[in-house]
Amino acid sequence: MRRGPQLALGFGLAALFLWLALRNVDGAALADATRGVSPVWVAAAPLVLVLGYLCRILRWQSMLRRHNPHLAPGRSAVAFVGSIAANNLLPLRAGDALRAFGFSRWLGVPSGAVLATVLVERLLDLVFLILALALALWALSLDTAAVGLARSGGTVLAVLGSVSLLLLLRPRLLGPVFAGLIRAAPAFGPAAQPRVAGFLVPLRDTLADLSGRHAMPSLMFWSVLVWFFEGATYWVLARSIPALPAPEAAWLAMPTGTLSTLLPSTPVMSARSTISPNWP
Image 1 (cartoon, rainbow, N blue to C red):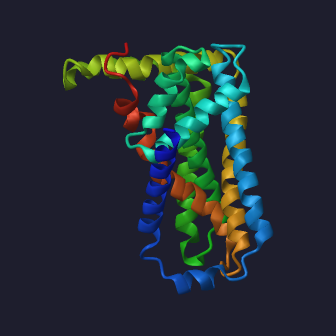
Image 2 (image 1 turned 90 degrees about the vertical axis):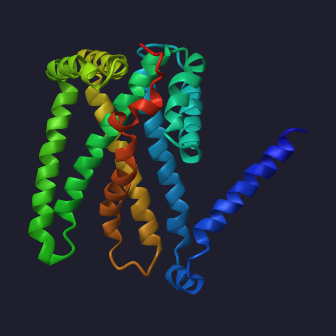
């Protein structure tokens, strides 16, 4: 009996936000832009998207199974999809906190270890999005006047991404940096050092564990697949709309748009919202 009001409230909120999103859209222009849309390409988009999320789940599960070798894929999928849904509905990346602390017992993995895997996941996503943007800038210089600038920017991003990959493969190089940050933290207040240590220590240990067991190359392979399928979703949808003259630009739109939303949710920016003040 309780589910009826909850479902009604959920549909009501969905309708409200849909109206807020579409109230200023020019209906005639939207109809013109979508006229002739290919149903085949549109139908392919959710399939490609599902493949991308499947790769995300398998990547995360491969990290979790180092702490719980008997973890079933279904349990990882429930926790992952639940956290993504919460992130879409709640502020301050609450889904990440839910995944680390709310699903810890469900996964059979300590909360600190789950949080560390989420942080590694964010780092991998950031690195591969930077590399994807660099590749897109090199390959898709659509405006000939901006070719030089785009390729220069792509080179800088490629160097940054390559250095980040090296650090993920050799996390010991980050040890002195992490130690220095922890030592410097008290300058920002007495509560700063436990927070910084609570963020950096499990991240350092997890990176060292994944690197020592040669698991990082596998995680990088899954990350390539994750962002390939993400870009393919954009491209498939762009191909479905005849009014778009250059659907290949979707490969540039994907890393550009995603980075704009990912950066506020990287570990450095979201540590205060995902780490409990009482967590050591």
